[in-house]
Image (cartoon, rainbow, N blue to C red):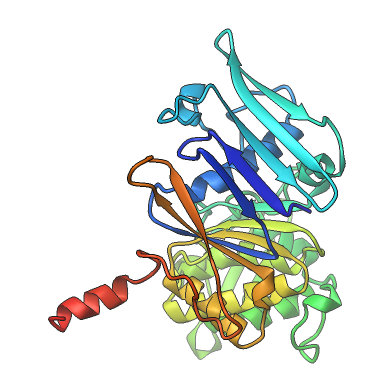
Length: 353
């Protein structure tokens, strides 16, 4: 598993090293580097899995030309991504040679390259562009991705695996039952007060889904809040993962009420505490405060959480990352200006303070 990520010369980064924990949360200003951290990981996965293709552009991430990807403020002639585990390192160095982008991987093969290779399905990526409500969902014929980076195959995966057993250590209430169907609906009920049923449409490439609505009626996804469809991929991927698997999620809060965001964070931190690793980018104070609440409620220990606040340095014009520290009660020890303090600022203005 990956414990550290070092980025040199990529986009707004000069040199930054991050400790990746069971639950790694990326927060901060727009265009300050949060997405670049995820792009760095996706570049590594992409180049390990798709050897010989365009180093900067592929299905997981597309950065364009080398001039788009390098740190032009520092006039970087190359950029690098270094991944570390407890026992070994893996480096990817990107540069131009006669106008052609090259990627050197060192070493070519070790445990980290096997971990990153999509064929081994140890890492799942759920994009912020994931699909929402659909009348019908497509079946998956890809070999390397169970859920799709847009979550487009999550319903199909659930339909095919709903009677399989969830790992015992991922089950919060064993009285509910052990199948994926029972556990997914337990958490759906808890987070958004709904349940999911699916049906394979025989002799087609489609699967049908319905969600529980008021008066115990099951309705089409388009006739209920779109937030339900957005979180299915998150719940399915988490409940079917194994210890040390990594799930990368952009903006888990999309189309969710603040209460649902908080309860989703309760789910994510519970799963993370059991050994599933997350890297999450968010703009939601409810996700951030949900992590703090999980620390307070002993849902996860602060030692298993890494939270980084990103901003642009006013003088150097490069990304500045600060690790946010919590005490055992979930209180922030080193508050940063701009760290989800807009509510207080707005309230002060309304009160004339």
